[in-house]
Length: 379
Ligand SMILES: Nc1ncnc2c1ncn2[C@@H]1O[C@H](COP(=O)(O)OP(=O)(O)OP(=O)(O)O)[C@@H](O)[C@H]1O
Ligand SMILES: [Mg+2]
Image: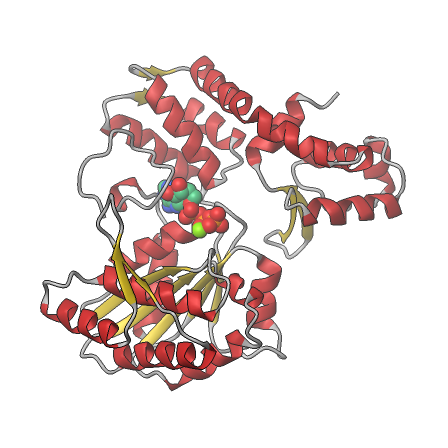
């Protein structure tokens, strides 16, 4: 964590500590309580809502006697990569200078990885060159090592759905078997491809079934986020009214990343007071900067797909994409063609499906900025 005061109170990259983090009190309490009771958790949501931020926040809030380890496995393609990430995370968790650090480093070194140091940051990186069996044994021995320490360990695995893509069959089954043998270690699995996460964790056929509690991360609460935005401006000697903060939240659809992005830009552009014109200008510039990417998306699509996408953009959430009402309102061909287009838009990750709080299925556009751009270009 960076204790230094940041230049901009709305960071848009990584977690920067509690001063820059809005709310998530309940979620943090719940995850910490799962941890202390030895229960593993699963965290799911659509992209860019704040899963990674919450994981890192929770890891700074662990009770005494716990050690947190964070691994992002998005870029891993097999068990060996997983092992590399796990080994590296351990090296990063403690400096070699401390007593525990020394022990951890000696243990990792005993597994004979190649350890390199990143040129600019000096961060260590472990790399193992093993065959499958030896890879599994090494993951096993790292977990056993952690489990036998005087501290208890929390292993947070981000983008966990990636494990379903490993060529090794049943990597999740293997990990689960290991997980169950551990007494001193709990896991938090986090992921954004919801159907894969629910397949991994909620399907009775799958080995993680019923072994963990599932938490769906929702958007931040409107008033809480609004007050946070106002407070962040104030803390840095700038002024934003309640109305303007609300306009930004509404425009960004309360979607954390996009709201942070607009606030970051608005903060940088405002000398003292934020006017309605100022934030709109910044939002417009954001869309213009992304336009080249959006043109790229559009060129991928057939005319039917593009018409459907624009219709979804205008609706925000579409509950009944094949209803006569929806088809008629946007001049769409027929329900069969809409269903086909919808499949393609989901495959391209332009549209996602989710359930609202009442459990009703809806379709929406992934990228809030792209949605706004579609609205600007709807004719
Ligand atoms: N509670 C919060 N308060 C302020 N900013 C937040 C909060 N949660 C997340 N953010 C910021 O919002 C952005 C998106 O959050 P994050 O990366 O955690 O989302 P995610 O759900 O992990 O996304 P992805 O699915 O793409 O991995 C980041 O810039 C992060 O710093
Ligand atoms: Mg993330």
